[in-house]
Image (cartoon, rainbow, N blue to C red; front, side, top):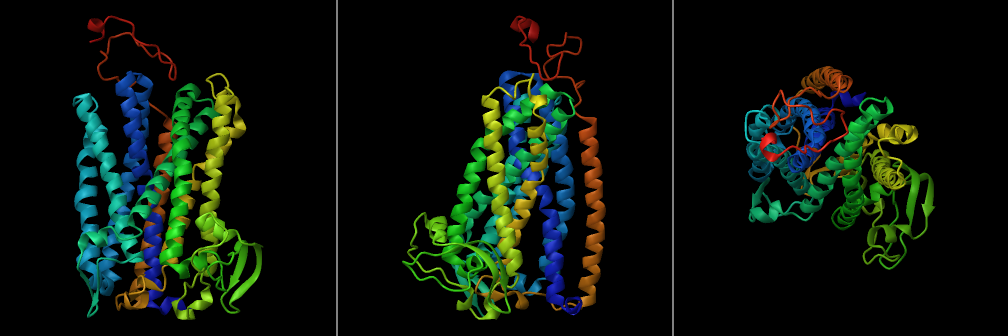
Length: 481
């Protein structure tokens, strides 16, 4: 229990708690924002009332996640001033400005147009409303750009150097466009989008499985599937590029991710451990399942790598990532989920081609609907484990190879940090229970099919009498208007 008196460890635990909890909610807003743009665009194009009702229904989940995300995100950024003041003082001229862009550009853009998106359906022109939805989605995803840019800079610092303990920026755009920035942004973008798609698909599968508006939610599931057929393979490809960047810029992290203790020289086949149990004390794996020569194919699609694969023994123990088991297995969990979700997409697409997802047959695919429900939270697990690998793998550095974590923490009494950590844990537990309560209430209540459709008079005969079955309005244009 020595960690209870270690301010640095407690500050790291507090930041990990707040970051792991907070990220749950922006994941859905960034991904679902794009989905809402798609679904509202389909409504404007086809005037199918189902798409309008879908947009109104899924927007409820957006605002729920937005609200909790704001509440949990503000304390996260304040910790840079309270718990990590030396780090903020050293890198604030760049790192602080990027986080400031996220708040003033991305968050304010999203917040400014959110009210129009939620409450402007019958108050503004449909085109104006659609522009508001697009701007909300842009704002949410701009947050990904700025936050991942700042975090990538911590991994591959560029654009300046440390001078008397402060990072002096000589090329601001070089710092923004640091070597891992674009790939990291793309990786997180696809991660949030894919996770959101599987959440939407999983909830839709629950309705279908319970025979509640099956045809209505089958439309959502098929749309999600069509998008995921593109997103899932792209995410795997971008993830592969990310691994190549780790190989090039963070060799110690790669060694931890692959439990490699011994170096493999250039031109020699590098082995890959499918599973292993790394042991820091003995500096070897207690057991392992090794695939000879496979790491070369994984990293560069060829057997012999052009550069050596360095083992953990190349660095002194104090310069190695410490949480080896955590890094190693979180990395494999993330990869396993990525391939599982891609496989789910492929299997469902085959069922669609076989006619099993028609309105008459989809409710009979009970095993497939259960699989989609099971898949709904897996994207969250993949994102969380990915961030653990990213941040724990950067240790013992806050700014990679420049500022150590132990030198980045504020000099606070350990009891103060422990007290705030406990308070955060209690408040976040209450927030999470409230989130689950309101989220489940939205699901139980379901869509409101009594909502008036913009552009359709209240006393006009219903064109779409059964949810999920769209009957085109064949009246003259004058009558429709």
